[in-house]
Length: 377
Image 1 (cartoon, rainbow, N blue to C red):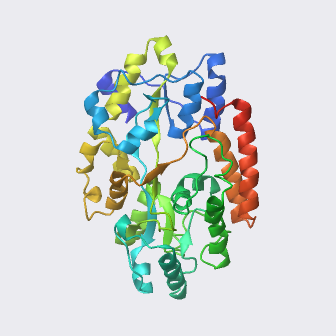
Image 2 (spheres, rainbow, N blue to C red; image 1 turned 180 degrees about the vertical axis):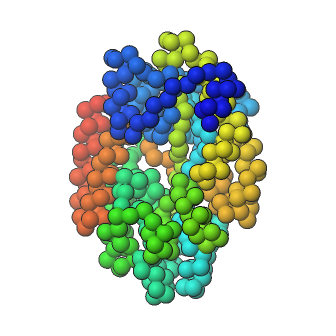
């Protein structure tokens, strides 16, 4: 994509790639070293801390009204901070349960199509039992081999139990991350293991689409290619169950931000030209055709057959348009929360008591938030 943009925009782009934690480390020292990049493409959660450090430009005066009005509301929500639009995005996440249609049919279970038809907790547990009885070794895979990813993928479950990671008013975790509701959501992982519905020792990615030892997978759009390539028409989506407080999905994506260094370097106009080009339908389709995500612009949605009603990915679109998606908390404390939840989730999968793990995580997170005054505005 960059090569084509270079030709059309007559720009030379020097790009560098970093893992999430390395990017954070680089950005912390970049203003001192003097090598802050002109443009940053990263998880939307990483941007608030850079903004608070004075490294991110507002896009309020740059983004045309026709493009902003065409963006999904979930994209506007993730791109807004401190009353300003500070990022753009080509896509939003698609999040639901991937399911093996043939396995569900063999087990004789009802297959919900819309989030309005989602299994409730009791029916979901009946589904798991029937799948197990039909010969499915571990009915559900939640990517237990990569606990850090559950900070995103498990959020709809947490929300449906009535929990959350952070108090959205105080921006502290006390009373929320360690609440009965959030503890119940994470204790459910322990229950799934105890029932033999989930293999806590799985250290591989392909339990669902490769080994076919699971009929359900709590994974988002990013495994689209693997699922469709390996399972064909058997790869379908079903909504995440209603565990008592409604049906949810989660949203959030890779975003594009302009740094204040671009203004200082005189490259801001060039940076915006790249960001604006990336929002054109051609490039949005290019990436979403590959990763199975949801185009960020409403006008692009109907150009994709899989996102039309009856299409394989329509549930993703339906959920976002229904406004049932939840965002992970936008806070400069993101990496602190992310790291603590990675550790806590890993411990819980490994057999630790959920209440103890989450209470310890909440205490350690809030100490750092308060020390850095990230809860104050």
